[in-house]
Image (spheres, rainbow, N blue to C red):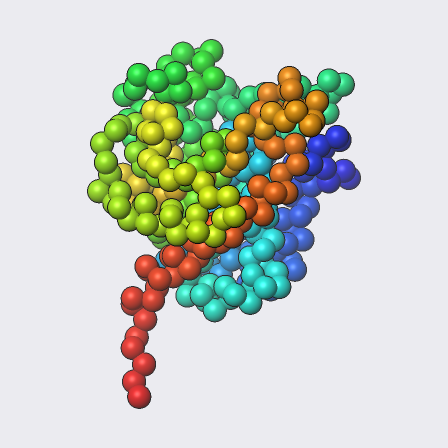
Length: 322
């Protein structure tokens, strides 16, 4: 079984499945892999829990590959999982995870991932796309502002031919329903989604220029993350990148009271040193070699474990009596 797609630095879907099981079985922190549900084409959507799974504890969620072409997002989540589960990362975080759970959803849109994998495997290797198997942009398929269309070319569209087609109704898609049901059945306090590209840490809102009630807190959390980066990302609300409706972070924040962040990884992947990136849209969204970008962002992502612990665990711990 090929672990990496030919002529790329990105994993096959089967390779991801294999490594997930290996990481869980070898983890130095208690871990479990669960099938949360299935996609349009009946592929599994996996969730990995680090911790004992007691939903009464505060929980942190990382998730990736909402958009089929954004492979570097999955690569970032897999690297975060490796560093958390093994050696120094496990030693640093094990005690905190006894009092919380860390969840990871590596591929929310598996049909889209496999479609791009198939395109990359063809003779020319051109690949592009962001939607699920029914042609819906999952990050425009959530309830908040679903029927409100901002003046933006990136807004969720009622037109099926649009790359940002929002779907027939909120959470119309199996993948959206799996994500919604997972969130509603857990005690998620904070989340981080991995997307590309933009070199930015984003927070609500995306559908409006109105400041959210936790604006200053979001800025503080994101700036603390950027202090862990060699090349710090910008920090801003999603609307400062572009306006979008039906977006997941806005739903997580407005309706689920979750401090929801989005990391737009890297800059445009076009690179004069690598001719393969010149005309292939896949490499506009993904660096040809993601290693440097993964090294830059993973410490920032892992810092959220400390943030959640300090905000939602430590203040409620009993004071030691001497």
